[in-house]
Length: 434
Image (cartoon, rainbow, N blue to C red; front, side, top):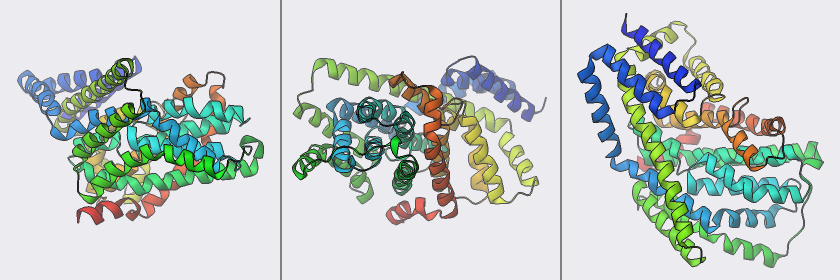
């Protein structure tokens, strides 16, 4: 059989393993190892397995993953996410749809600490939904804003998605972080516009909340300064060049720990929970990366990237037509496969294809992350939707899916803007690194 046939069989086996519930990392390892045996022999496969495992876990830049995960867990335990939501609630809660808008703002702020969509959805779901329910918000808008807001976790830096993309493509983590800032703010704004439109058409979905005094607003803003300081130190330090991304992650984790101590929540129970969650999430991320780095050489040996690139080019769709086909494929696959897993599975093929057409690899990272975000809330298997369902079991799953549709359309609009105007993503990284 030709190498291409082995490659196709490898992908078929991979998706079969995922369909029967085999963990992504294990599936990647098995297919990559066995496929390399068929294409290059057992010795080459064994060398790839051992060498890539060691090379992955010893990459200095990857220390950013456990540090940012630790920072997010410390901040969540310290109650910083609740503080941000409360501040936004008191400032805009009196407006129509104000609590939903506060949820989006809270998710955006927490995303700048956790780098995780799932963590953002869980945390803000527990904080925001009881408040929206208390003020008689419609279930669609309440749950939709939580599920959609949670997706900001892999776009607004620090983003685990950007770190994994950077490692697999050998791009700069710092450039990718900077590239995510303006698109993240743009998507947040588009979500707020979506809320305004929904509540204008259906006022009962987001009734006005109570007015708060100026003193109460200032007090809530003061309590939210903790999260603002950490974001300013980490992202501002990276932008000014004062910190590398890894150093910024360490400093951010340290200040999050200080906040935990100052708020009297530095107990053994909390520290144990934070450490356990950090280790579990870090272990999962590194295991997937090891699997991806074993799977990628098999894909290269199969010559599938070259073959697919030649086939797609032969359709003569043009660069943007080809890009549209690829992004549409990601949206469809994202309905069934978790975003980061989909990234590590497909990147060995998609990255050389798209960059070979002349697209900027940093811009591509932002575009791919947004498309993966769309998958997180797309039916029938939007991961964030089921996360929100676990937090609010009294709401039907179809109600949540109906609630995310305005936000899904906002994502489409944001994606179109970034494709048409690439400088939205490239302005900050080019200004910082050129």
